[in-house]
Length: 178
Image 1 (tube, rainbow, N blue to C red):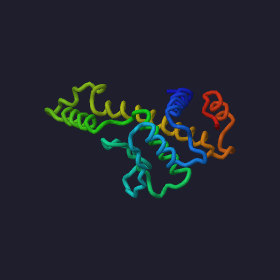
Image 2: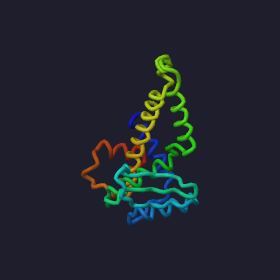
Image 3: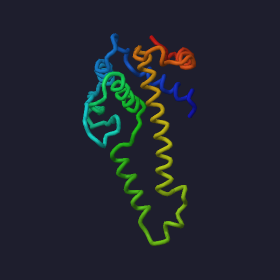
Image 4: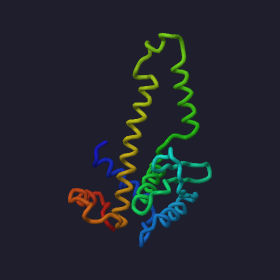
């Protein structure tokens, strides 16, 4: 996926957001998004050593976004928006799909000695992980782009951090400052 395409997809996802709050507040945006979707969206600061910077999951009743409690200000907002992008884009794997994938990988690694050598490398667990990683890299790039574009639109990025190329792209995609 090209950078232009990633920005276009991110701009499309931005269109799914309610109006950005003025003055800016990530909490207000999350409340408005929850109301717009008719589904709770709860944001939790957590302090777990194994947690990546943030995490979004559907608990069956609503959506939850976790972020490191040490993150504050712009950084915290960026993490939360990154996870909101995953939510809006429908990224991720359901627990049922994850269990099925794990069971399939376990079955493919069992068998008679030497059988593994005859497997088609395009179909094995390593190939599945490589395809998954490639997809996840695209999803992560999209989420990073989305978060930055929202914060730019909200006026949260200093003008000196936005290059002339980014300003032109924002104008062309309609994702510039409001």
